[in-house]
Length: 200
Image (cartoon, rainbow, N blue to C red; front, side, top):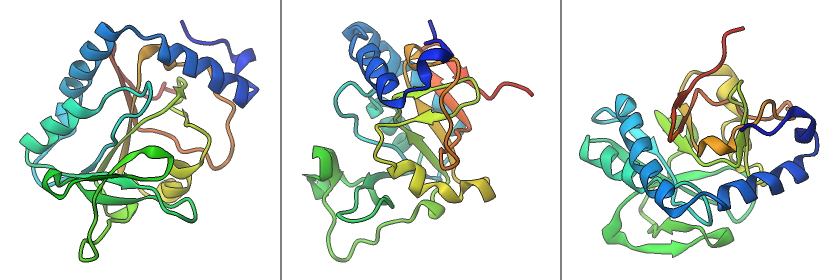
């Protein structure tokens, strides 16, 4: 059941409630949801596309099955690299032979060498993003660090990259408190299907 709008005015309270909901998702549903999301994402995964995803931490929905499918379908997969300074994410090619390191906030990132060029967000075709909450207009609430909002702020003037949120249905709210810098998603995938923006 969506959280009522009245509760969504306080962002810190809403984040706390949504974290609790996400943590409460049963293990069996987590496994099933990861498979369902990969199946739903299939329509967007085409050979040669530059696709960014993420390594799930904490109670975030697992994107592993989706990443594996993207690679089998010939997509070039990238993962976010959190900067030491500023809020602009860059994206490193997923190369499991190159190993892993823990970035800021203990998020796993691909090990990058001096010769590897990190992609800017504008160079991507499709991005699957984690979130804490979303609403019927596909506004996204993240952890509060502002990394995705800053990185994709240019999206107000461009179609690419397409932004697809990954979530459990319990993370939907009636309406999120909106700030001018909040990024709007093109779709959200949940275990119940594809959520698109409602018609106005």
